[in-house]
Image 1: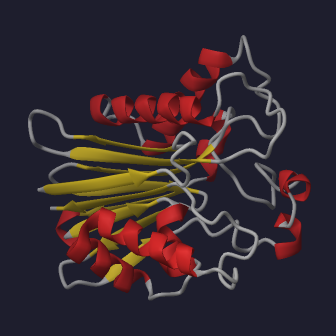
Image 2: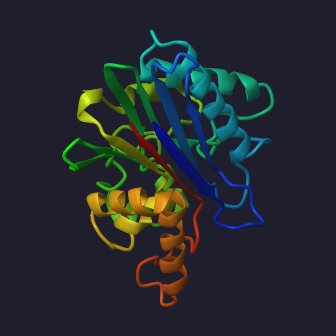
Image 3: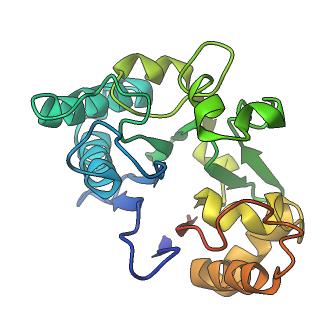
Length: 260
């Protein structure tokens, strides 16, 4: 098995709000990966004294520990418990009911000798490559289905965040675990997998350099860092904001490749 990963901040003077963790039990009979993309709040009060990097480290650490040690828990149960633990760690100091309380997108994959199970929440991406080289993207596309005008400002986006008919992220409510995209496949049907935060998936969904199979080809050939380097080059070259429009020039970018 080969596992390769990278995470690069969008701005070297700001903390990276992404988080990646992998778990390989000593028995060698399985493993797990967790990728979180913290949601950057706009300037102003978000009700929390800790910040997004603290939140993603707490949530990601809890999810990695539970994924590796409690194999009898489902991935939604693990996400719910990790949210519960993280919320409990700052409920006494922070307003967790605030619409912009720290939150994150989630990708989790866990495997044993027989099966691979997965969970995706919001706009990070899981890619599954089959033994013949076909690539399937596991996506939570609720954000993409919303009217663009609804997401034009932070104020209007807040009306759709973690709301029925809107989109969902992991924040302070464990019930969001019931809103995740989940599945299970036989491990014999998976040759490799990739996980991307939206800073890395820009290669496909912002710049249109290829489809998900092409993206996985870059991930395999050049590694996670190679994919992120390509994205950075595209971002820097978009001086007229043809693709980035009002988005960040450089976002935190994380990518993972697992080859079985």
